Image 1 (cartoon, one colour):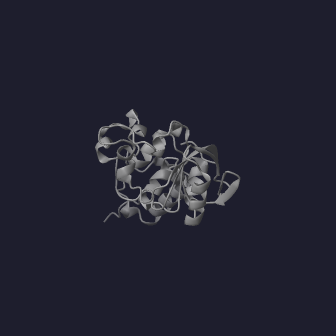
Image 2 (tube, one colour; image 1 turned 45 degrees about the vertical axis):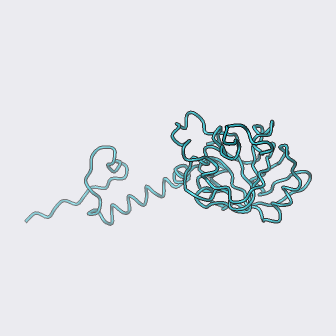
Image 3 (tube, helix red, strand yellow; image 1 turned 45 degrees about the horizontal axis):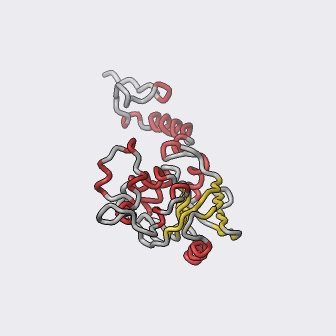
Length: 223
C-alpha cells in the first residue's frame, strides 16, 4: 500500500451529512468484481436520476471532479453497513482523503486499511472549510505528519488515531502492522510452547508450528 504523508491536490466539496455506505455504493453494484473498478459506482443514485441522466449541480458531476483527491463532507460520513466496497468506490474514483467532523467507525477502519485518510475536523472548522471552497475542486494541502490541512490561505488541524496515523504514514494494513511485531510474536510462541507444551497440538502441513519455533516435547514417563 502506498504510504500517505502529504497530499497537495484538488479537493471537492460534498456538503451533505449522514452519507452512508449504501449511498456510497448501492448494494446491487457489489456483484461486480473489484478488478472492474468501483469508481463509476460511487454515489451512483445521487449522481444520476431515474433515467440515468447526470443530476445537474451534483458535485461529482462537475467536469473537474475526477481530478479531486480529497472529499470534504459533513458529519457522520460512512455510517451504515460495514461494506468495504464503499471505500473501494472512493479509492477507485481517485480519492486519498476524506475530511469530515465524524465518520462511521467501521468505515474509517476500512478506509485506513486501503490507504484512504479519514481526517476528522471540528464541525465549526468543517463549515469554514466549505465556505472557502467553491463548486469547482479547490486545491487543498493535507499534511499527515503535522496533522494540518490548508485551503485558500487558511490552515486547520485535523485528528486521526495514532495507530491509524502510523499505518498510513508507513503504508501498512493490519497485516503489515502485525509484521512489525514479528520478533515479539515469535518469542511469545516459543515461551508459550515451553511453558505449556500440552496445549500445542501435533500438526503437519501449512498450519504446523514452524521449525524455528518448535521446542522438543518431553518424553512420556515409562512405567
